[in-house]
Image (cartoon, rainbow, N blue to C red; front, side, top):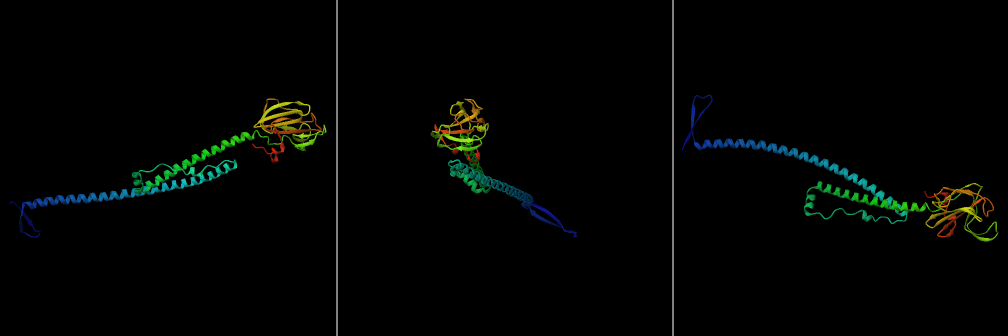
Length: 305
């Protein structure tokens, strides 16, 4: 066996001690040095890893906190928009009721979004609360988008109906054709000129000559001529079965075939034909049957505009 000779000199002493050590002991010392160096390196590495972990952990927590705040803001915004949408739904229902339409089925507005989830997606959502929260917000956003689309479609339906009704109302005689005093009502009476009892198919409105007379609805002039009984008179076909007649005018301002609009001048009050004084004889016919014009004149002479 080989030995190493190790000299040991003690400070303050003149003596030197010699120690004989086996050769393998030197190897142990060299291995010990390597182990110590590795231990120090591992310690430094551990400190670095722990520091990095703490830094990344704090950064991740900060990012998660910031993300949660943003998601909460989006949640609040969606809730606010949803309340506004519910208010619009209430107004929409009122419009439907006002025009005699059936309101939209509310269950259709609460339509489900998407289909069944795979097990992997469910596992990810359950393992990550933020992912689950964001997926929930996404579903609510899609549901809100569907509600908005349904609301827009429903309002378009009401707007289309109102447009059709407005087009119809424009052709319904709904205003007084002139100003003055109601001198004779609709119904049976004795004619003031002939003295013969007969049906009075309109109303008489008396005033001074040259009082303006207006069309009571949109339509086409079908008659504009002189008649022995009606004098100068005009007939207007308004469509949808409505026809109005204006008689005993001093003069007419429209021609046959002319399109006229409500409030457009058609002539002036006079005393032509079989008339006892200046007045307008005004008739309303619906589906070839004489109607009482007062049924169509709106209170305060308001017309649908």
